[in-house]
Image (cartoon, rainbow, N blue to C red; front, side):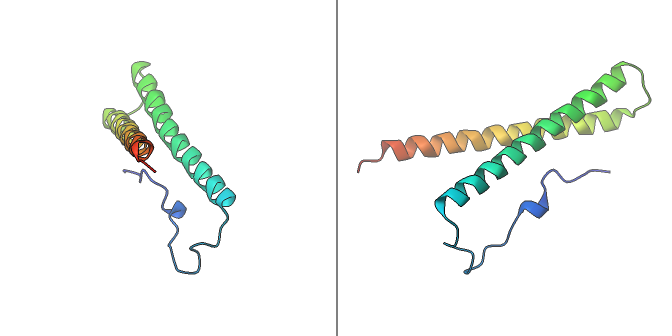
Length: 100
């Protein structure tokens, strides 16, 4: 069975009453929390992949396809995280190049 990579409970709908109701400090804290949880999820996938690979190497009872799925899930989440990081850096550099 394949589990979902993202946590759908973290997605909150945007409505007109919630826009502009939080202070910049609250928004910063909320974003920081979201970012930390996302990185923790990537790390968790990497650790699960390592544990599954270690079990397979030690000859413990684990199916090869479970190890491969865990490995691919970890790889995809890490690649997605790297791409998001690259886009954020690119956007930051573009903003810094703007003339005021």
